[in-house]
Amino acid sequence: MHNLKGLEKLNSKFYTMQETVVDIEVKTSDADEAIEEAQTVSSEIVEDLDTVEGASDEIETLRLYQKHLKEYPLTKASYSLINLNNSLSKYSPQLVAVESFNASITNDVVSAGIEGIVSNVIEKIKGIVKGIVAKFKSLMDKVKLAIGNWESALEAAGRLIQTIPDTPSAETGSVTVNGVDFKQCNQIISGIESVNSKIKNIGDIIVFKDNNLTIKSIYDVLDKQTLDIVGFNKSNYPTETKIDVAKFTKQELSSMCDKLIKSCQNIDKIDNLIWNTMVNIPAVLDALDSPGIFDRVFNTASNQLHRSLNDLLILVNSTAATLATCNKSFIRIVKARAKA
Image 1 (cartoon, one colour):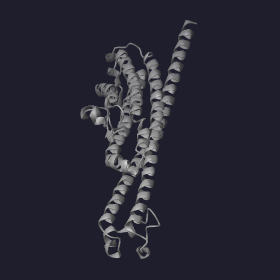
Image 2 (cartoon, helix red, strand yellow; image 1 turned 90 degrees about the horizontal axis):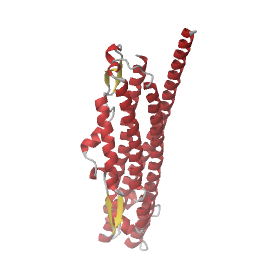
Image 3 (cartoon, one colour; image 1 turned 90 degrees about the vertical axis):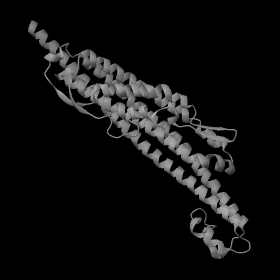
């Protein structure tokens, strides 16, 4: 009877371990799925940012044509200079054929037509940028979902760690897996904590005051070394090596598990802070309520805004992807150690 009870206890422990492993795998899979959805939104944001940059270039071209119209009479002889037929036809069918130029079509008429086109392009830019902000919110919601699943997976890994016997590592047979060394994971965890403490100092990423537009950048508050540590704009990072899981004690694994859970929480805080930096962008765009102001203020800063938003996008994706690699590695190590 005693042996039977012992066997039942062993079987109960085995099934508890199996349930925990299944829980880990489900949560990990859910996290991966959320990250894939986030990557889809990221690609859309990149395309939209490129569209805004192209539209800003269009406005500069249109203004150049207006400048030429002020300096040169609108005649067939000067037509090769301003090249209206080829360049403006995509904006307005009313500014197409040089044969239609007559006494009623003056420089002022064409210039006014261009002004109308500029207004349309400006509204297009505003709409796309507002859409980008909305997509950032969608992106961060998906990253939050992934991070939440990672937290759950790590909590389950913590339960699995408790089933590991307090066997000295020297008595545990060697088991090797591919993984990220704990030293590198600790550096990444510290880097994410540093980003969390500093990113709030950016404030609003775009500020319109006294008819001037100021664009902030992550480089205003984060140094290159910190960005490198969290995998900013890096692929296949952090690197994995062969790791003998037998060297880890139960205490070491528990400690790393707690650190990774806290780092997940820091990623969540970082995304909230990044969202706070850009939430005012639609209101700022609405404040640029005339083509003249938009030209002078926004269009000259559009490339800077493009870079700044793109850097924020990379930061959101990089920190999440880098920590995910550490999480996957850690869970792989824990599962192997539990079986050792």
